[in-house]
View 1: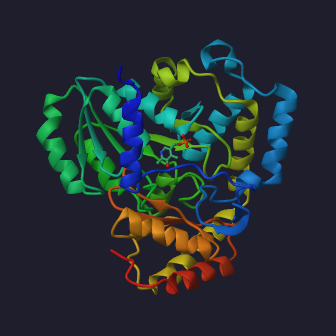
View 2 (view 1 turned 135 degrees about the vertical axis):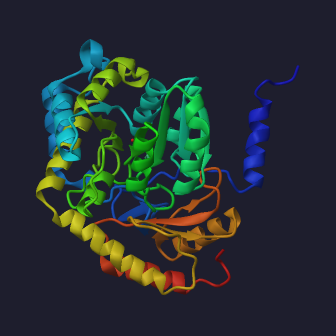
Length: 393
Ligand SMILES: *Cc1c(COP(=O)(O)O)cnc(C)c1O
């Protein structure tokens, strides 16, 4: 008798050999600009909580109040009994913030992408997607059964060529891209991307997980960022998460009212999954309110981003192109990335090595937060400068 699960063990062995094995590291403290890990205090450059809102007393109070009033669970899927006034209010608020007619709140960003793509595209359709898109966009595209082509990262000429070549054989086309790329920190050239969508009458879905609460003068994301630069953009599906800069949990899709009505009926991950808990909804509501009324958080974040860019650009390292609070340093392989991450950790800085299969090339990834003190960023730059060469691509 052979063990039918034996291949799992073999597979783990392969992961270990390739230095691709990963395991979660439990924090011994709340997640802020500093964390405690294995009993040691480290400056944290690995958080998606860009504005520090997950620790804001007003979000905590809103979540506690929601638990008192509504309880700990929503108790049902949204079309049966799980939809309450907090979700309706949050959907309204997100839609207004994003400049959209309506929005739909999902229990995670991952589920928002999966459900939306599966509702929009099927076997007779064409999906064109940036090769560095987030896993949720990639999996959604694969699962949809549509014909899927990935174009080279940010290459709008390649996207145009693929559209020209394949669009006439497809019933419908859907274009997918991260707004801010989660592992590189660069951004989708939205004006060109949406021009192509219009020209070929394709639908477009932009994943603003790392742009929501980060990009644009109102922190409303990619659309806000480009419109601020005087670009008038057509409408498109704006997806995002409540789990990063909004300091809560959940995801959303915003767009025209009819798009949202359609999704409410056709998104399996929305229809058949329990609605988000009151505490998460209330925390996200408080977060949007704070971002809209207190621009100082966004200003502090971008001050830190500029300072970090300035400090890192002087170093003999391969900095990956970035227009966001995500900064990366390219490394030749997974082992080098792991070694650098460990050395930084010994020096008191937490920044993870990001390796295949998450990304095609290994790197160290730094995420800036509004609440980092400039001395913490200076400390990181000093630590990087002290590292022995050669550790770059
Ligand atoms: C984090 C992330 C998601 C998933 O959002 P969750 O709310 O964490 O499920 C989707 N897309 C991108 C680009 C992300 O970075």
